[in-house]
Image 1 (cartoon, rainbow, N blue to C red):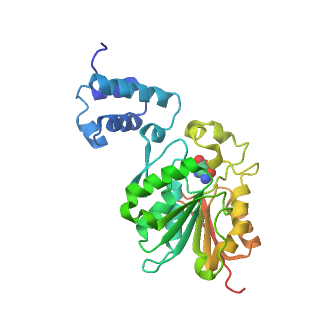
Image 2 (tube, helix red, strand yellow; image 1 turned 180 degrees about the vertical axis):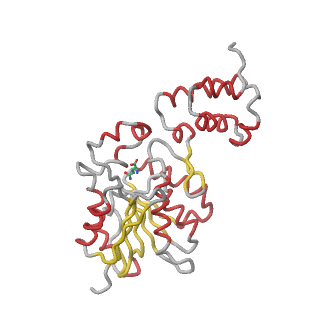
Image 3 (cartoon, protein in one colour; image 1 turned 90 degrees about the horizontal axis):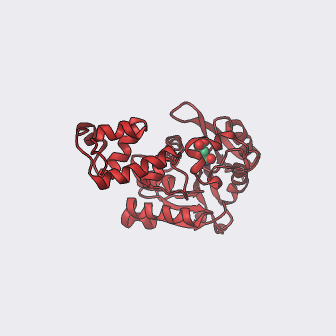
Length: 285
Ligand code: GLN
């Protein structure tokens, strides 16, 4: 048997940054990170130690902490994540926050989330807007299974407010026959990284689904497809909001204007990076 280690000793020996070592400890021991800090002289039991060593090993090989733990915090709640879905980013909270400006609290509205992944955006909106009815689409059946599980856990009996659709952008979204079947808000965090971007070969992102990251050769293919098709699904005056890369604000603004959107605007995330561009579908047709 190996020598028993205290939590502090295991953390140091793991070679991981203290925050990550603490996240693994709190996950395996089923206690809060604060408890770990307060009890770092406690001795690790053999079973926990073996589990932790295996996780630390995978982390040293590069696997993202969120996939090791199977969860990630977004918009104040924990979402289940697997390698089938993009790990929700704090940047994307700017998309939720901006979308909420266009979703009234006391009125039933129809919202569409394209490329929902873990369901983080749709579920965050559903939690903030009890009257909203949502449709959330993804081309990956595996991603939709994760999203549905998140909705069941986080919305409980209210989970039925979200309809999940297996769809390649708008392909399987029913064509509206009248305005009441149109959406007042369409949101999307589509893949927007260029295929040759070297950033794809570094760090956590290597383990995430390529289909959720790469928007074709230019990076802008999904942004373009959504901008071009969204108006067929929006109510007059409805709003399309898309997340994009730090240098894509002008491109997305041009895509929206070309597609006939008005009142276009780019919003920065908390880091001050242009992150979300939106436009209103014109009301004059
Ligand atoms: N913001 C992510 C990143 O650069 C990309 C997410 C996306 O393509 N939608 O890591």
